Length: 262
Picture 1 (tube, one colour):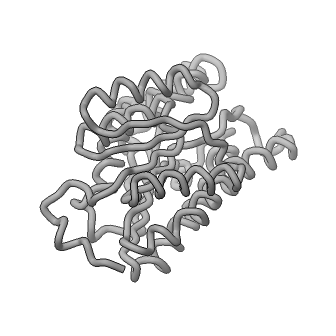
Picture 2 (cartoon, rainbow, N blue to C red; picture 1 turned 60 degrees about the vertical axis):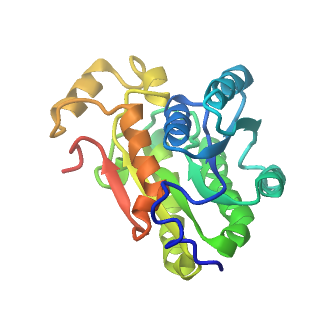
Picture 3 (cartoon, rainbow, N blue to C red; picture 1 turned 30 degrees about the horizontal axis):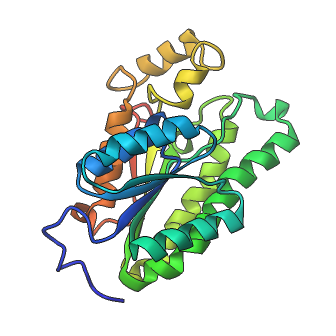
């Protein structure tokens, strides 16, 4: 592996592109925007919202940086392998892989959970992330790089009826820790950003239904900072972990929940 750490210590990012899985959502699109603003070329994926994704790509490309969108179902191993292979072929190097994907899930008590829904979410989220890792690790070993994964503060303070978010992320977090431990000798870093209630994306779609106003008010009251987080704050944390400013940080979780888990 080529040691690029010292050579690029004065650069925000190493050569190559960042790949953002789930880049078209409320949080993912902000991550894409902040990565471009910080000086990285990006490739991002979307699930089904083609118009929104390609509109975002066109807007970001006006900065002069590479910003392209592709439809990828991460639970499909062949799609992930083919997609990453094409990115590597065209751009030569991936310096960061960011996973901001997540299933659209109902809020449900464990006792009421449908086994079919459990299997679907675990396959989409856990097996999907493993597909990303399996397809990208051989390339990342060549010159090093980083993985940044969106996780949940629910692993520190249990959120009632949120098992379909917390359980898969527990498995994903374990995999991230294993990558950090096993692959550090190849210059690979792996970190997570654990989110509390963020006023963007899935939360906004569920607010008023699964997230009642009473639920939101209680969560805000029980946090130290007494407010919800923003997509911009999430993106700032992700950019930091992806950047060369975090070159000596691996296997860590940044809890972004306004002190809710204290």
